[in-house]
Amino acid sequence: MKKFLLYFLCFFGMCTTGLAAYNTTDIYLLAQSKSTTELKKIESIDVVDSTGNTALCSAIKDGDVDAYNLLKETGANTEHKCIKKYLQNNIKPLFKK
Figure 1 (cartoon, one colour):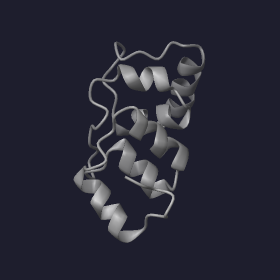
Figure 2 (tube, rainbow, N blue to C red):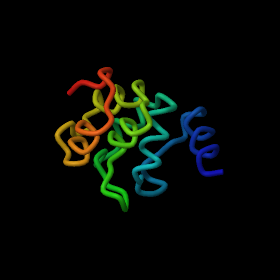
Figure 3 (cartoon, rainbow, N blue to C red):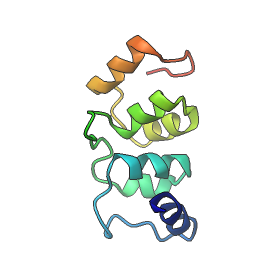
């Protein structure tokens, strides 16, 4: 339900960082929905979830090249320690620093 609501709000241009702080999942969903404008509004795009992953790491883990590229373009930290974990284990050649 949260995913649908976030997509719905962003589709109508009503995503806002004023509603609540974004977590890793929210940021990843924004990247999946290609909400560049909203991603640029987020103060800390590199928030970490309970497993130590950022949204960029989630995109890598899921093999989501489009979300990865968008997060990278909007300032996600490509040197975060979770990146190294995935680079060593399961990154496809599509992902470049």
